[in-house]
Length: 282
Ligand code: PAF
Image (cartoon, rainbow, N blue to C red; front, side, top):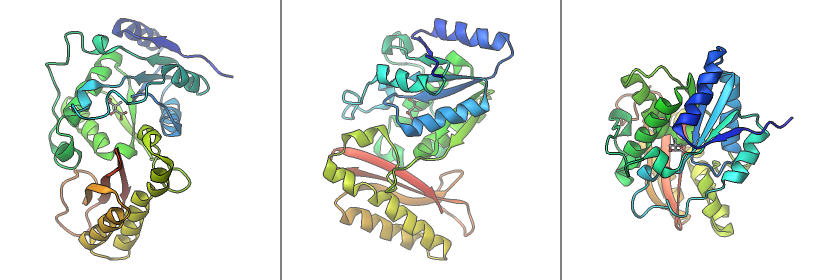
């Protein structure tokens, strides 16, 4: 039976609710999102429900992680539909703060900057991004104080940055990864897929297809650099503008140094005015 979640908009109300859960010894999981929820988010919520007694989903389109020319203004905002979806998943609390609740004095002047896994890749193209993410996730963690938090592997570098932040700051929060959900043609689910025209939508699975072929070739003994170069060419040939297609150490995201390292293939490319990212193990 559907259970409508309690929707709170302030840190004070969130804390009161989480305190009430804790008072009876319940464990709390947080699923941080920017809303526009799709089945990928639903799978994060299911993981949260397995991991803890109570689930809090935050919905906040975080201005601090968007650059001045990025899609902050056009990012889909669908709070009512999101709450409806979360009702059928038995989420306990939706935390939907306003920008002024999250950043009362304007944008945060105290920021969290994580080094290590944030170097390169997304940071080369979105220099503000991980400081914006780490700052808001750090604030969400302190506001909610969950036992665990769920992050999708779709944003693999983000997952590694948050994991590093929690370790470096000794936050007592377990970071639980959740696998990427895909359409039947391989396209990774993303709120930004909503921007794609029908023609672009038909081309978009090429990123996953090219990465899969590279991963298969590498596992069969191909040189990673050559396999990656082919993937890059395949993606560009279909008219996408590639930001990066790389093979990296799956844990540190540093460039590969020696054979046998755990490997992750990561890509970001523009399809028209939409930027798509994806990644796979190899
Ligand atoms: O992955 C996202 O949706 C966002 O980057 C997050 C983690 C909610 C922080 O704003």
